[in-house]
Length: 220
Image (tube, rainbow, N blue to C red):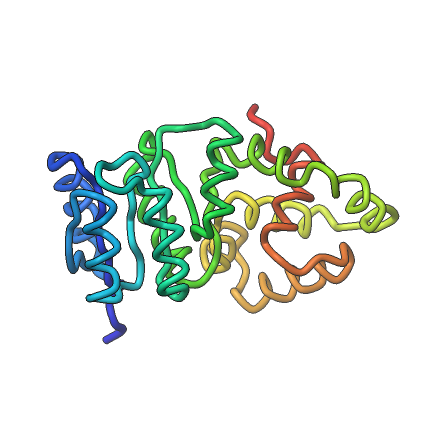
């Protein structure tokens, strides 16, 4: 049997913490190994237990989640950190990314979105909540927007490739895309590789940047 994703939950409100634990433990591939009520305790437990993922609230006593995340990334960079926040402000979210977190999700997100986010960061990819992705990356891309436009000018993605990249930018896994498109995971990977070669980009962050410039992530 495949090993479960070992999760440390760091949240100062006991009721919220209990709710998060119920969501995590309700998944066959996840387990809560410890809980922390403040940032300092979160860092201590993470160093001691080395979880796969730390689910960390940003607003906590003793040591803020932002500071705790930055400290933990310096100490144990392989531990994945998924932050929970109510903040949608671009400047605030930029701080999270600069601290080295592997993803953020809004507390207003559904349980299904949270579970997906955990699986994505546990798998080594970045997760950015679709509700604020466009705002954040429009600011982060900033100065390199024009140069990236120059790099992709003249490329011709097929409709299938464009839709596939949009799904990647929104946080869908290869398996989820394959199921939605009715194709194999290998075909998804082939389309993705071909698209990235056409656009001369290499990372998911650049895929999201490109998607923003194309207007793919705008709200309907």
